[in-house]
Image (cartoon, rainbow, N blue to C red; front, side, top):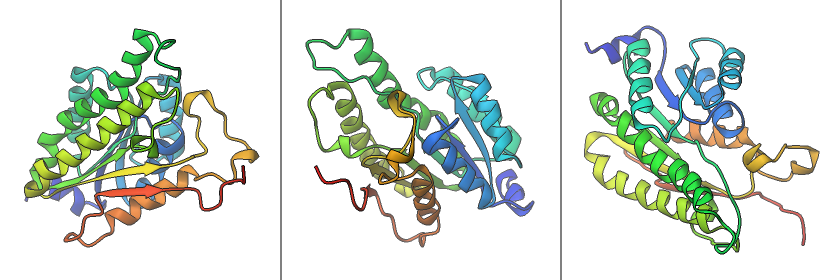
Length: 242
């Protein structure tokens, strides 16, 4: 019996590592997975926020400070996760930022912040988690966007990062399927989150809610092992008329 199997036999469905999870989609995914029986590690760059989020989730939730732009930090925190929980079963790659301006006005630093977090950070996160996932198979979710297929003015960095993330996700499927690792890219449209400085309000009621993405994640984990929904596009059912 492996340590990972022993851990599952001890009363959980396994464990999950979720980046960018102090609030919004990442937090709701972590909360739903914890409710479904997973032990979870959640990350953020803000210590106070991630400590508070882990406390609200409760149970075996661990909140750690980790910047996905730092490969060494990710390797360290994934190792700490596997030490704590005996393995890794689910990776949810969620951390992301957005800077929006036309190309002429966007600074080099603004471009790098988005690409380094949304695309390189996703690669670093997966790279750090693969040794543990390969031990017993698992599931990788990448949180992309409909902006990964639909460009818009002012979206140079964000569009490029999400187009790239979709490509990375598709390659991961091909690279990892023989290791019993599934990969799904989730591509939402408008979501009521704190992204890019937005504060959700009643005016966002028509949008996808973070808990909807969390429910989708749980549903995908419950799919028969033989079936992989590799790309899931999600839109608000009834956006306001323009």
